[in-house]
Length: 278
Image (tube, rainbow, N blue to C red; front, side, top):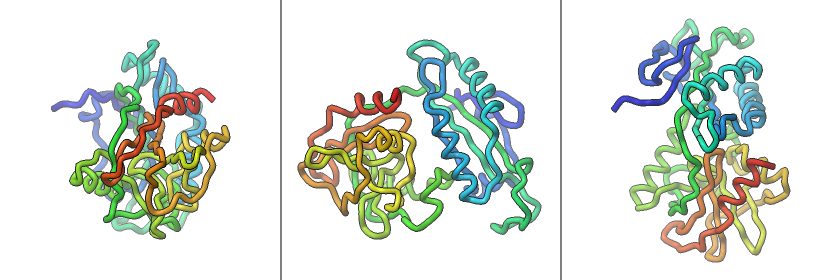
């Protein structure tokens, strides 16, 4: 089936399925790159500053050149929103900003010793309609996959999503929709594509960054607004816990984890909206 996702690459707009990129790109060959997923709502990119700050910080951590500057990017984002008709009230979409290390002369994983060259790196974006998701879900704690709390990659939203894909696959094989992941110390740290918030003894908590969880944009907003405290959750959830998986595109209340029934939280959508507007 042909995609209707709008894409931009190398100065060209078109159907994302029809646009091409070099087969030597390290993002394609080695998942050597970063991305940000930005909610488009009512004609504007939500929390764009926070996403770009994480993007810039992650590029520096991985020894990449800085991603495109905001003024240039904002013009491109505005045109993408207009081209997809998402510039009307009530319209919503998911925009993905991609930044790879591009193509270098030599094969293999080695990198040049010189400073990274932004002209060698490669940027592309995609945009498609998408409504935020607040439906309750069932989750499975992955046995096969764990996040490495000591890895710099855990601090960045990289193109390498193989671990999350396998955790989700494992969860689906167990009859659940989503996966939760422990870190290499055995503590719960996040979902397969979202941050974990847990309401325990009347207060919302979330694993600290030292757990290996992704420094999510919505998670950071919750901490800034003092709605959540960063603290260790432990290896599993408790029967009296409430749990949410939150990211820029929605907030899912967990109604079951590993077959254990949880009381779904009624705060999922309200909390998400508060963070988006705050």
